[in-house]
Image (cartoon, rainbow, N blue to C red; front, top):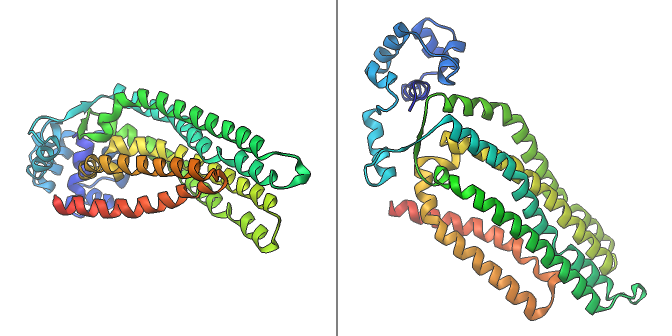
Length: 331
């Protein structure tokens, strides 16, 4: 832990704001803010004052490899064997951020492909029931099914290629670590700069997912023909795909900052829980996929069985909450 992080941690432990700490030291709030973001380093006199205020030694503040007494249990708990934590250099941190930034559109587009993959088969299936369109059921299933599996295959290819590249940095999301001097400050600054983009992306994505159902409500109230309803199901899926695409793009970039700062879903405690939850998540989605494929091939109602996915998503959120509660109770 670097000096900037120790100042932030000790200030919060004492329940002081940056303004209150600045007043005690006789400096400006901006000075304290720069110290905590690693934008500047306090002089020796201020370090001595900080040590006195925080009731710690100057060695603890100045030596990155020294941890406070209250921090030791967390480190041993995370490493599980009492070993030292891995140190992340500035170069490794920048490489990780770069990988996530490039990977965000890949994962987002792959997910969007999965969502829109049944659109054609849904529309063609409905049109085949209308004699005036001269589309046979075989053509609808054949062409629609081909496009569906082609899109899913492309999405899987994108997931795998990105996953292989990202696997080299999985330890950052899975295990505890320490950052070398300057890394935390750099990441905090990038995180602060990206906050506006993240907020807009999440807001627009969520709004698109909400308004996606509006066309279906309108069509349903008008008692439109089945093929019109099918077309608007396609519109619904496209709007959801765009919304989810936006959410994933900004969330992956924001997640890379949280990973290096070990905040949000990437705190040491959260990582322990996630390690125990991986088996549950994998089994759940494999089971959902098996049910979807089995149900779809058995009934050949690809225009209807897609509804399993939103239901599975909602159930997963509920099941995950229960599983997390059980894991926390066991700990």
